[in-house]
Length: 261
Image 1 (tube, rainbow, N blue to C red):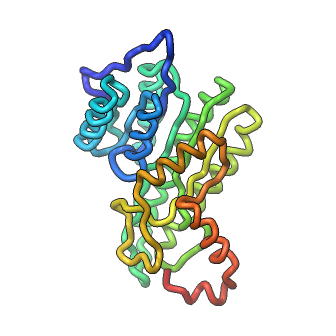
Image 2: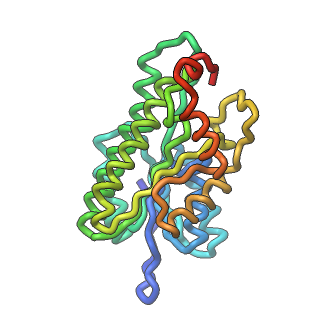
């Protein structure tokens, strides 16, 4: 929940847009929250690490010279608390215009390791948490007849790779869910954006990147903001991952199963 001294400030003559970023304590989520605040949004920051959220909020507000960022401690695996927290944010913000789901984990999995507990945890955070949060947003936005949903998926969901089946599955499921949500909600005037980053310089970064450079979270945030403004449906970021994945998608199965990534 928010700290006692936090309260969104009303701007009756020029109301600010309101955004919720789930998974905002570091990496892509933090960068997106900072970018949204820079563009004039009031932003609700949600994540498990309260100390980190406080630091991000204080830095955003210090740069803005006014309170734009507000923090809410939340573990997306606590599914029963998602609706109450969503309603709390909605009550305090008066409205919500944009929801970004960025929470994600990638457990380390050995090439001969089949650990259902690790896979279940990734499914809970990367997919079930996303469905739970975006369902709340979908209900609100459908009632409003407007709104924006952004889901941070991954290029890892485009094919089933040997390296981490559970992670690949969670991201493939998330991408499919976002597409279905888009097909439902676009006719109601609601924008749903699927973001598929490649390697990003975050805590999830694998040790072996091969020939591919890691992008800065700030680069991803800029691409996401540009895609929001242009009402894009799906983006790969950086852009050249789209062409890498076109090649990967057309590798024959008998070849692809022998690859190590």
